[in-house]
Figure 1 (cartoon, rainbow, N blue to C red):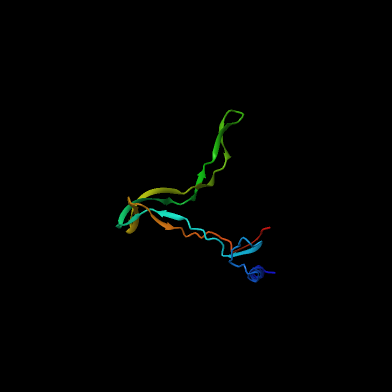
Figure 2 (cartoon, one colour):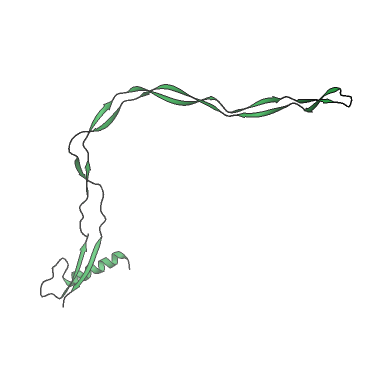
Amino acid sequence: MTAQARVLTVVVLAVAAGVLGGRAEARDHGGIRLSIGGPVYPAPVVAVPAVERQFVPGHYESRTETVLVEPAHYERVYVAPIYETRYDRWRRPYTVCVRNGYYNDVYVPARYGNRVVSVWVPGYWQEVPVAAPPVCYPAPVYWPRPFWDVGFSFRF
């Protein structure tokens, strides 16, 4: 049985009993209560401060920007050969190449710098608070409330 069918059954029973919307009197020994829509809760009030709109005209502003001066790259560097002077058994000097020369690629990271530029800022409206009592508006919040409520009461 769906929820709508249950509600309809309770309404039919309440109408059949003749107590829908009625009040129990001293001679009654029981009753059925059905309320659809539930209680109404007041919405909270939100205080909004009083403001005044002012126009700020367009103007130039100085801003600092970080700019790329030199991108990252590799530099080819030549490493010179290494020579040693050695001596033979008769103590005569001679030169020997210990390591040949070669090229090596060295990574150079990017280099950045700062520069100051003038930028046009267009005019805009700005809200400025004023010394006045706040304006109160109800908040756009709807409090949840039950759809329907069924109760039974019996007295002996």
